[in-house]
Structures are given as structure tokens and as C-alpha cells.
Image (tube, rainbow, N blue to C red):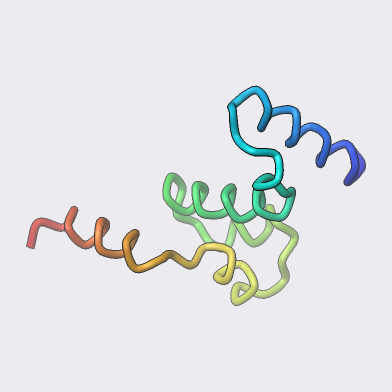
Length: 79
């Protein structure tokens, strides 16, 4: 699949989902995929392999969370 085909597919999906097309980019989708993968699977080594990264530091950049996400996760600990 070419880069152009991915771009067009994401734009089409955005229209179907009611998301403004100007907010949809293939690279943003990569970040979303990485964050969801870590949330559900949690294996950063495997994620690095899937994304084609040779260094875990690169993958870590894709999975960084914002302060609000950290706060919500910490609340789930019920400490």
C-alpha cells in the first residue's frame, strides 16, 4: 500500500466518522496506534518491531502520555 493510499483511506474514514479531515494525518495514526497498543498489550519491544524502530527510545516518543492521562492512571491504583 502506498503512502497516498493510506492518506486517502484515513481521510475517507475521517469523513465517515465525522472527524474534520484537516485533523487526520498518517503519522498521527501511528501515534494513536502506538498509544493504544501500549494501553492494551503493553509490550514496547514488540511495538518497536511493529513500527520498524531499531531503538526503544524512538518508540518511547510515540507512547508518551500527557499529564491528564497519567493522573487518570494513577487514580486507578486506588492507593
